Length: 371
Image 1 (cartoon, rainbow, N blue to C red):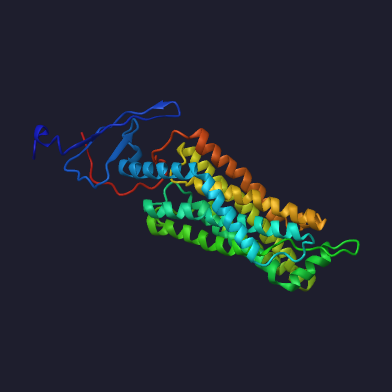
Image 2: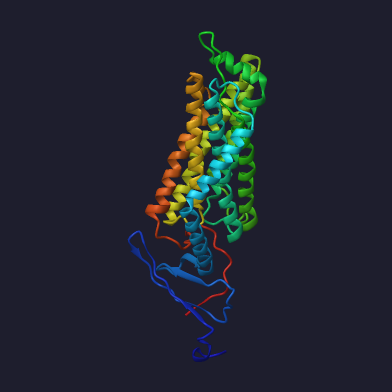
């Protein structure tokens, strides 16, 4: 075995100290002999009992630092993103069919442009995270609970929008329930809402699948709370259908759609909270691509503008409460996206390295000898 004088050039020595919650932890120095350049360099910090509480992959830091720099360039080029979304919205909104129930030809065009611009913004918001996960070959920093609830929520939203848009029986029932003073109430679900929902459920499923591909669900399973939410949601939906069928003699399809819409709103709140708490616990937003937050916020604002504008044009404000899912989704999205931007640009703006929580599964480490 080589002595220290001959092998020091090939040995890598790391030391780190950690102070957390007002407690100082002792520092452990680790040496890994003959560490190749392409292997992960790991620092291990221990508490007073010698129990490891933090593992940080420096090679991951370099990759994430590069990702952070790439995003800084993207976020500084927001004008190009805005022009892309606006141009795409104008093209799609002009060429594709418009809502025939809107009386004003001018607002009919503007509503279509706003709708497809928000469709592009919300649809594009999925891709930065998917690309980042692929480049990092990891989903650490992205909440698994967020991904699971995202799929559940968009399954409900897809059923909600497609049924309201295409099912004539539901359309007739809606008009019968919300019409007043001899005036027919019009559904405010539009083609761009349907297009977004179909695309969203597909992309949310792709993002969730990346957790299984890069980190495996064995290493990063959803919490029991989220599993309970999924099972409870399925049970409640089945129970509602059976209850209305027994009591009314037929299934209340319109009521069931509102149940799905309510689930989607609740899931949206529930999916954002784990990510916000994860960012807070890690004191970092590394691994959570903020570009999708900016696009998500843009989509939320435009969706709200379209909904209010359509109701104003039709002079039928029942459209807002007749389509509560779209209203509440926009409001919840705007609130949490502003929170995420605050975390990224203000609270944790100086945190650019990946720090792994003590309760996260540890990656496979090369053998390290403590000296």
